[in-house]
Amino acid sequence: MCAVWCPFFCTRNRIETPPSRLYADRDFSSPETNTMADIFASGGCLCGAVTFTVAAPPTVMSQCCCTDCQHISGAGHLSIARFKRGDLEVSGQPKTHSMKADSGNAMTRYFCPDCGSRLFSETTGRPGIIGIVAGAFDDNSWFKPDMVIFKSSQPVWDITSCDVPGYETMPPPT
Image (tube, rainbow, N blue to C red; front, side):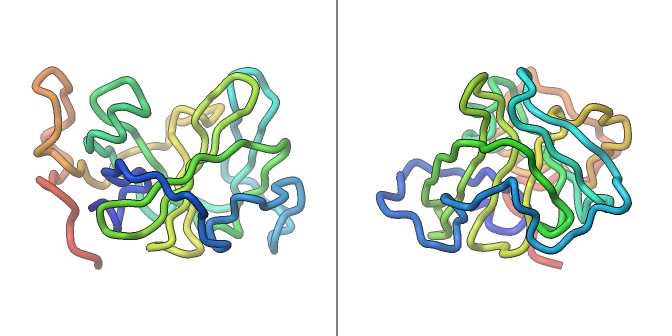
């Protein structure tokens, strides 16, 4: 259902054999195209086994209240910044978990194999875009959500800003 903005779809169906474009076996220690001459931000997992840098600001930032994001975060929403995949450089080898979204798209989430920290996500519905959880950045003071999505699933105790546009489900693509 979160096929457009939320990289953590409302899902329950595990993908037995993920499609090759999910990058489940990608070697993250080799950057694809970016020389990383300029770094916008950096971060990593709790234990430091997986670190990353991004070269440019995010394309969109959101807070997702779908039930999957609630389960993943252990909170009422997950704050996510999406970047062009080529702007990300990763050191270390994250582990993956793949699922099928309600939309039928496949979602792969990346996390540290040692400490379990949630880091990235990619979906076949948004090729070339990678979501990074805002809490994984060393300094995330630049994060300002453009929208709150799946407000229909938002717990009453989870308060988000009324100044940020909210959508009951997924907004249409722009």
